Image (cartoon, rainbow, N blue to C red; front, side, top):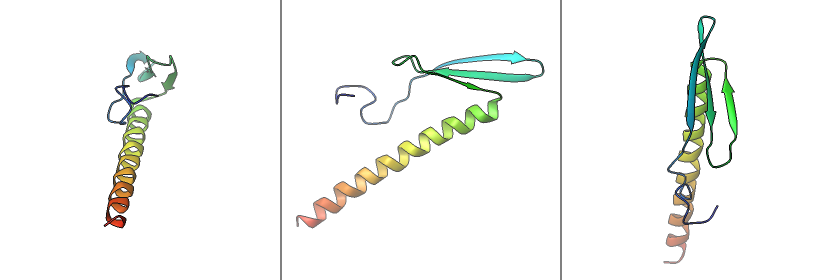
Length: 77
């Protein structure tokens, strides 16, 4: 992904969300428009867990990157 991409800084996620009722449960699917990748979920709890995992991973990697920049800045002083 190049630096001009809107997702280059990991602060955005774009999904197409599809919800439908099957029997007595809600089902869900996410599609990433850029790649066409689809992920299905048997219930809303699994969908929410996936989204939480994705955003927590991004928050961790963003913080690690900031920490590395801070350490490098301090080392040069």
